[in-house]
Length: 92
Image (cartoon, rainbow, N blue to C red; front, side, top):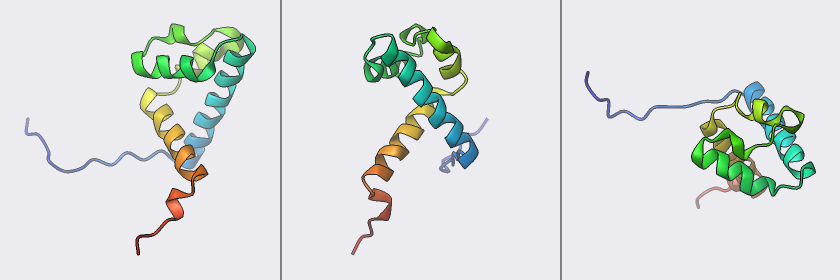
């Protein structure tokens, strides 16, 4: 099998992004309500893939496991970029 040197494109549709955003919000809320640091716990999950970083309270663990970890990173990165208006900058 030959290895391609072409760049592959990965595209998440807007409906899927909205769903990922809602899952992150629900997981964040569940972690916060249980007294955890949501950022640390979500980062731990993304880095390790170990779902025990996420509480099972309110079904948060099951929810986050519905989303691929790269999709979580993509959603968070997009939100960060949009919040800083980097997507509107142009090179002069």
